[in-house]
Length: 300
Image (cartoon, rainbow, N blue to C red; front, side, top):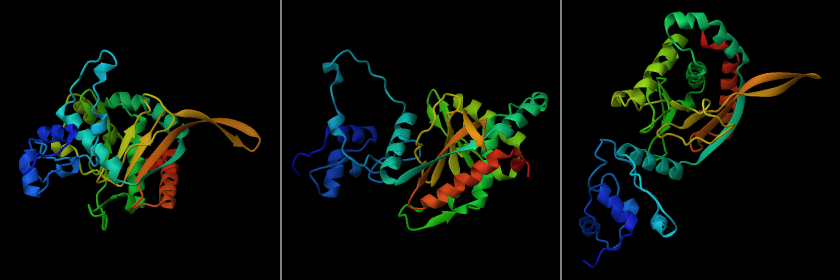
């Protein structure tokens, strides 16, 4: 066979996946190999039991010698970060995602959290606003079962789930991790708050087991502790939607001619348009905002 034609990035991908590119070309009967040919089933997997999709386009034009323009240093990405990056790139490329924005009044939740301060201290549990969001999302998923679903790989079947598991995106020094709160719709606020604290702490210490990740109905990604007013989170497949939260802001609401300052949390719902339409997304987030607006909804 003639010399194999493959871009530097494709050859690098093949090396990273321990794939013999010449043998692959011979098996395919081709002289040109692209990144999409380096699929999980072609030769070797990712080595961690969870093969990630290969890049869907040739990015060889990004292979630039940056040192030509000034001093640079190189920082290798961890294996974990490399797998996550490929998964995110594949999700962004393959899912027709739309983000719906709204906001919810959190004045009642903040007053309720303040009132529960002494009990939280006695229990040794930090009752964060995120616990309310997990409880509200669990109830919203029960009310809107098409959001508690996954599309089959061919996009022809919607798999409706009889469980409600909520993923919590945790920013760690080793990259983003998403531990999961199982059966969140059956747990009270104190139990949810305790599990959030436990999972977040163990994620930071890289002590999350494989059985504590994956299988979520939907993921919450919370940037409220950092800042921002809105963003467009990437859907975490095989989930069909993801909920983003940013920092609570004070918004002026008018009661007739009287202005009233109201603390509102921005909500960003990204969803897979193949399985969910815009009207349903708007109804879902409106329902969710209503749950957040009255903490008694989380006590039922």
